[in-house]
Image (tube, rainbow, N blue to C red):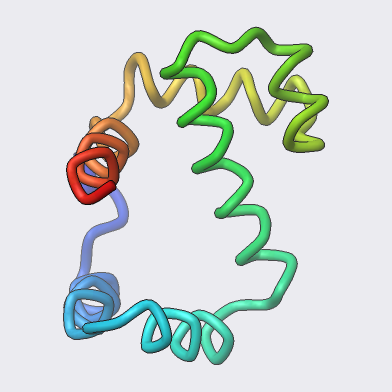
Length: 97
């Protein structure tokens, strides 16, 4: 899984993320820790994963999200062969509505 990049600092980042309680808390943290471009890229990848899991085609996803086919392909690869992080988040988001 994350063994290649897991260390004290990444543990700290994960724990910091878990400490956030509201959407506003997350916005504030993201704004301080990442650039707007990085945040938007992460948000775009999550939307691509959502659309792929719903059966949308590459052209439909590219049109809706502005993502390149390379990004869509990369996300699809992680949906199929990754650590199941996208699947976990998407399932939990569905449950919360």
